Length: 377
Ligand code: NAD
Image (cartoon, rainbow, N blue to C red; front, side, top):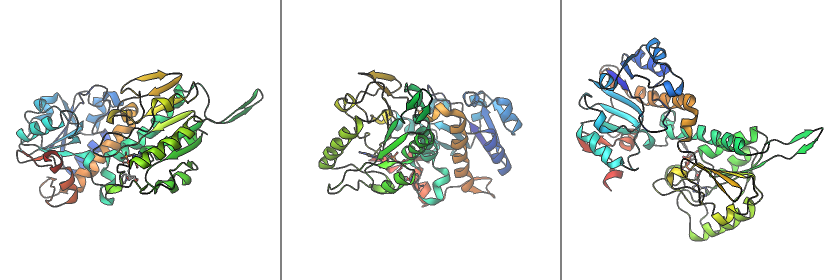
């Protein structure tokens, strides 16, 4: 079976969907891997490294010709996928509900591809090692703190020096999923005084276990905010008002705020208003990790660092791409773990059994049609 590894075309995308490590593992399964020229360059991986791992290097048409499995980080333009074998798998973060997602899905169907959206991986134990959202969010949470720290014109840890004492910075993390937990841990490692909030009550203990202070809305009915699959759901108007009041009181005393709040299938909840930002002291830094999903922070701009009344708001797109080597290593392992879990030795290729919860969750197109329920709604 022939595998094609694409060179990402999206602007700012530095990651690659296979590394020499995973090429070796695919080769050990009996596959031949073709890597598009320069695919790993932005992640520090040279074509020669792939060749040493057993891959061949070619242009896009060359790697796609007869490929039965196409690996990408993002959903590629279907127009550039001619030549793949009928029924080939396309495995990537396809963003089917995003801009152009439906049109691309239709294009994949027309090519006869079986397109599999890796970000739709169900959150079940068996799929944990295949979960690109977790592996990439973890790095995003880490990098968000480093970006904030480098914009912040002060130190994070308390420092007692002969010239006097520097107080520890106060860091507030809003949204304690995978990214938020890593942001808390990173800020703590850097010596900051950390507090955090979430709508899911289960996070209170997690915040405490990392040595941070939980900041929670108390005594409002229906505060659980726990939606399907462990994700957050939308909160009531009463809850939102209580949360806004709580944040207003807290935020004015913070030096760095990292927001990560997302609700699947909905725009990101607005957590910080311009009026609240105005209460922060000059020199403070806010990182909005949800900026591409609509933003948690009023005035945050995707792809930009903006200043509002002395407060710096960081809105980098695609935070994991800022750690290209590690993000690629983990992403590539997620894809390998997925493909190898369904590897059929006799067929010499992966097979997704019908009815498997993973197959049901991630399949976007099959047999020339768009099959994902979420795209047909
Ligand atoms: P996410 O990226 O969807 O959202 C980030 C966080 O924002 C969540 O904790 C959410 O509760 C929070 N949030 C949403 N609205 C908010 C609001 N108005 N105010 C404050 N916070 C708000 O979340 P995630 O990182 O994908 O994690 C969600 C859950 O799934 C976590 O409990 C995580 O541990 C779990 N998870 C499970 C698996 C698995 O079992 N395989 C894998 C990954 C994550």
